[in-house]
Image (cartoon, helix red, strand yellow):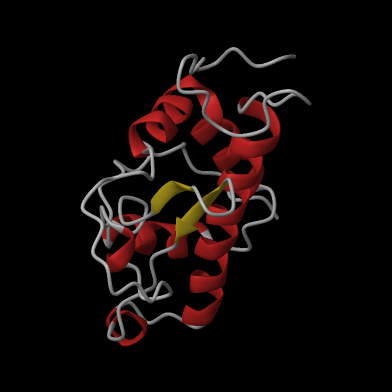
Length: 156
């Protein structure tokens, strides 16, 4: 059954600003530049990526309205981080997890299911952004052409 909730505002992307702040990256040299291009990703969110992806996610989220209300109460949508990964030339994401005490506090039957649903939302947002909003062609493969970032100029 689809989750019938209004589309929340997209997260403001203010995650770690350097590669060294991600646990998965073992980087002894601290890079202080933000090459994750969060502003551009936020621009795509405003152009419709977030709405399209969220609506797609609700068809298979597997959450009840009550479980999603807990996600909202805990501000977990805002805790998402989406960024361009220059190493793989793809959009990456970090999905939030329920706090350890949330299952007891909110009498949740399946806290792992909520974590899995949040991860699924991150994956769908990344896929919709890559497949529907970021224009690629054979000559210029990549997310962001430094000379021309066109938000919302997607092909229908």
